[in-house]
Image 1: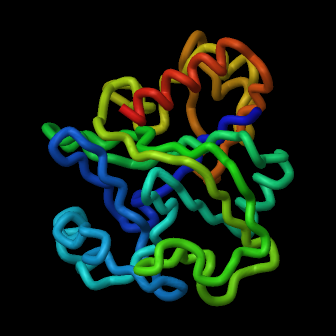
Image 2: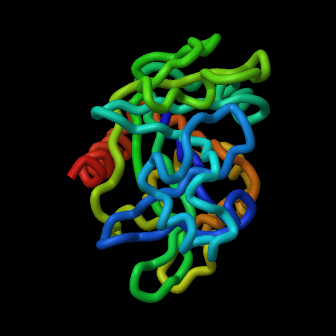
Length: 238
């Protein structure tokens, strides 16, 4: 079994801002899209939030890349190119768990930090991706338009976090942004893109890579890692 830390939503490069926490709930803003989308921020109910977060630079009627897509207790997540190549080479598939994280701003202070905002357990892998897959009113972007030959869609039960609790925060309090607190088992098991020993700071510190979307931990049947996974999923599902 694998746990994938998957970087998604607004950041300083895509969107140019942090996603907000609203009433104690993290709201991940999907990155803007120019094509292969039929969904605007307004249609997602995010029109006001995206205009505030970007100070009007991105408007409510701008198309967004609605991915990962959560609906009716399900999740659809698409990947392509080098990032999908990495997932394929790592053997990611049915039974594995994606933990989606992104850049957020603390509600009271505006402090930027990384936190987990959602999760999916892979139940099916679609390649090629069926055209128009997803809810009728907002089909998934990876089922629209032209993609590379590696275009892939992961599907399974999933949920968004209802609360921005400290247990789902990754960045160490006080920062810097990419200095994470991680469970001790992660250093023992390892994480893709993080093979350099100087990234790991005992007992629970990790300086995460600035590049890369998908970081994979091969946890197998490790009891400590599986207990941590169960706890994180319980926190997300409330």
